[in-house]
Amino acid sequence: MKVFKFGGASVKDAESVKNVVRVLKHEGFEDTLIVISAMGKMTNAIEKIVDAYYYKTNNLAAQIEFVRNFHIEIIDNLFENKKNVILFDLEQLFGQLSGFLATNKSTDYNFIYDQVVGFGELLSTKIISIYLNEIGINNSWIDVRDYIKTDINYRNATVNWEETTININALNTNNLFLTQGFLGSNSKNKTTTLGREGSDYTAAIFAYCLNAESVTIWKDVAGVLNADPRYFEDAKLLEQISYSEAIEMAFFGASVIHPKTIKPLENKNIPLYVRSFYNLDLKGTTVGKNLNLLPEIPCYILKKEQILVSISALDFSFMVEHNLSDIFKTLHDNKLKVNLIQNSALSFSVCIEDKFNNFETFLSKIKLKYNISFVNNVLLYTIRHATQNAIDLVEEKGVVLLKQTTKGTVQLVMQ
Ligand code: ADP
Ligand code: ASP
Ligand code: MG
Image 1 (tube, helix red, strand yellow):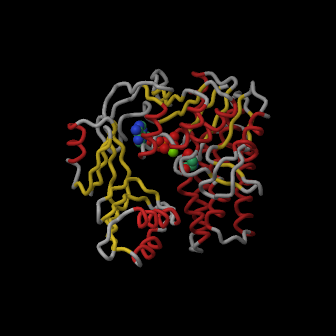
Image 2: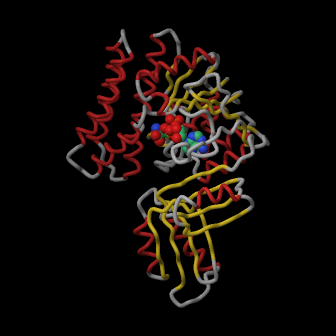
């Protein structure tokens, strides 16, 4: 069995969905499971529905209309027949969404987020599944929430591998399956999500449980490049990389593969191909065990919207184990992700990411016991396989606030 993953960019409009058909016909689709994300930037749009509802702003109806119209336009451009079938399914899903918003009693933002945001994937997979059936590519739409079971950690759920494996093994293969990325469900049968951009991980979960022969992630780029092409001119294709290299790149923030994707694949030695959905003649990138980086060139990773924090003791004492563990606990309690650490006798610096808007709470707690200063909105560059030329190239981009070198990896915090 093969697993294919199509992300938002590959299904952003009707033409793109038709292109998915081209990919399937070119590659073959027997014995395949396809994981699909929400269309285009729909997850961002649905996040706005969540916020409008939660914060009771007056644009909830408009946000819902925006998402509905986006999908209706795609349906209009995609379907010649059977429009009523898909429109019926679409209205059913919007009915479920309205029903949830009207009856929900919970005040837990993360719970509400997961119940609402998953409609992006449900809508996209319904539309694509019905379209494929209509043009003769017979497939079975499956609800991923019946297969991937997780804990109750809404917005960043952890997979229950035991249950998930049993569920997925019950799938009768020799078929073409189509399902949602990003989603799971917990023991209360409530929708959970695996973290933003988590559809890659979904593909890896299915591949692991099915002992798949490979996973292919279809992208709007030629494969994994040595830098994000939006920020680096002249980014070059990496023809092959090892699982460890891919994990390191994803960990430092290369947004081309979700960081959790690699482990399940590595554990079963399942190759991952990252390929262009535009140019099917290109081989793309192969990620596998012990593959040497090819070509062997520096790789640049940029993380934006970081906060550089510097902390020292109020009484001029050393920053050692006991105060460091106290600071780390406070960071952890506030779900602040640490991307770089630097320590000296009297001060401790960290570059952190505030995904859940907890920095103010962290600040107020730390201020009680330490001196703290911070710089908002800095950039964190990581260069793997760094050369002097590569470092010079990054340093030219701004002012270096902090620099750290470890075994061929150089990290620069810049403003
Ligand atoms: P998807 O639609 O599958 O979710 P994304 O838009 O999340 O795709 O990811 C693809 C984008 O990732 C590319 O268009 C590119 O701008 C960006 N990107 C960032 N880092 C890299 C990299 N190292 N190699 C390739 N693409 C990268
Ligand atoms: N649709 C989700 C997101 O945009 C998951 C994904 O695309 O991987 O985060
Ligand atoms: Mg994405």
